[in-house]
Image (cartoon, rainbow, N blue to C red; front, side):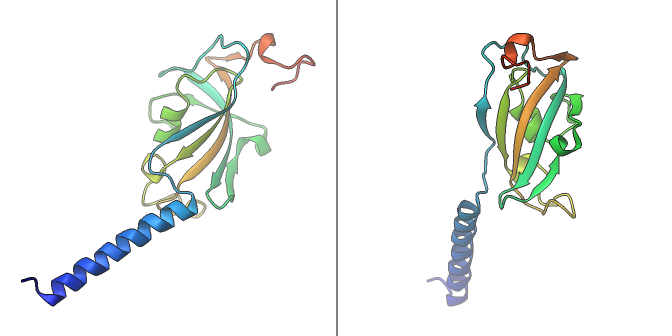
Length: 155
């Protein structure tokens, strides 16, 4: 027969695990990368592949809506080599196959973001990250004329 202390420990651990799962679902946390395509250009002449030099506009938020960084506000998209670890894993995976001019919403679990340590002071440990992204250029090639509105503005 199990000892009462052992049963109490198991019961407390089970309750804590249930509470953790419930709070994760309640707060909008995710356990796997989620990719939502918000806009796709009519034609997709250029796609992002591993090793490409990409230029991306983004707005990063926590699940409570707090914006922690935004290239839009600076007017300066980030440029990096895709799939080589220069950015968080959620970006390296979530931007693959994206068309120039495409907009995606990435919901990135902590394990593909900044992990348990976070990025103090703006990103707490274990945080799910939400990024609104727009692929501006691949290897220096911006969106073609057909990927813009009739008035010539970017979509």
